[in-house]
Length: 258
Length: 261
Image (cartoon, rainbow over all chains, first blue to last red; front, side, top):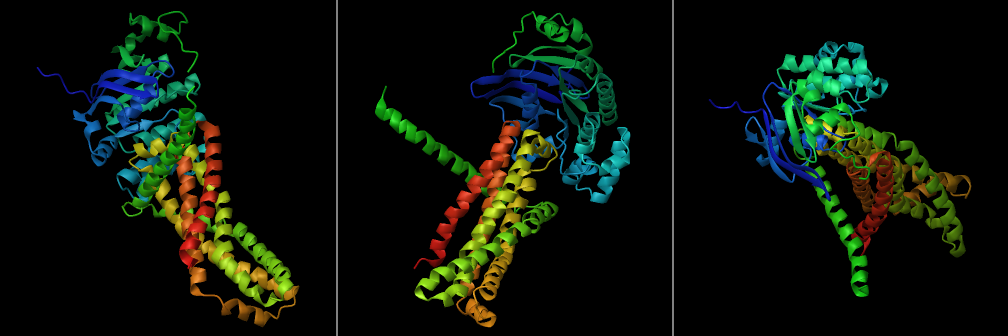
């Protein structure tokens, strides 16, 4: 019996910034339809990993396959076509502050799918409604929204073009626990509704267990553990145990200098 | 310590740095310009950049031009009086404004106003991941952010310079006729007698080049900014300083090209 092809397969991914080796041979498989959570300390390279997969950062070495296609060997136009199937929720939202909310949400529809403005507006209102935001919010600018609303708008923008793959970079950072749970719930709903494969990076253990089917830990530039997200708190791996329980003592030594 | 090697290294490092930056800037400019030839075109972004650069710069350019024309008339009148050449005031005002002061002063004013704002806006987008977000939404940031601004710069500055030329000449006319005793008809006749098409055209070509440089330096410094608020502030300053220096340098080069015999 053949093993099903993972939606995303990363092999030997390496990236350095000057002397600092951030990724040092990352291997990761994300099966189709799975919600994978990648945990790891600050500066462990989680965002760099996602940005390499998205094509925002060029890795020094390694292979990234999406649906079995090595995206690093593709010409720019074909690579853009592959990455167009990925939606991304940035850590700080990264909403375009010169555009009203509805244009932020509909941006991908107009740019990728050439949807006309009037139809894109209607679709944006519909998606905002699915995420519990009134259509009148569409007229506001991002600076007029609270942190939780900005996250919801950013989520709306990420899912508007119905992507195959969704990336979430610290989706609950900066939110209170209730709003964090609300955002996690919305993420789960969206992933289920779209049937997408999701990769989330987070430090928030409650969030990791809520949205993840599977989990992996990035440490020292490599994946040091992977398994079901439900077993994160009792993984048996000393690195994961120290991280998930927030212990000062253990094999992970915090770098106090850059 | 190896003194000769240290001296060469001390000279070589900044020279290499300048060459590296110049190369990167040239590639950035070519990339930006190439997007003006390849669809899709962001007409809405171009319109917004044109309004920002041309319409909203109009008051500052107009005031600068009118006062410059007035001062020019006064200065040339008092200077030329020493050798009884006051009759040349009208020609000096119009030639100075159209060939030189209109484009240069409008360029410097717009560099201060728009160059800094462009660098700050794009720099903020860079440090808050908005540029990365554009890429994830299948939008080339060079096409969306840079190309429309480059074209707006090329179009906006000549428009502003036409206004600056007219108002500069008008400023000289007001001072000359109201306080220096010139006859209005004779002043206007002198203004247009020695004015040639090339005088105006050279100023407009200079303006187009300066507009491009202002937009380019604003976009480049913003796009390459790093390090949060401090990086954005540095980008805004660098955009204004570099655009101003380039305007003055290119002014010399273009003047040499147009008028050197």
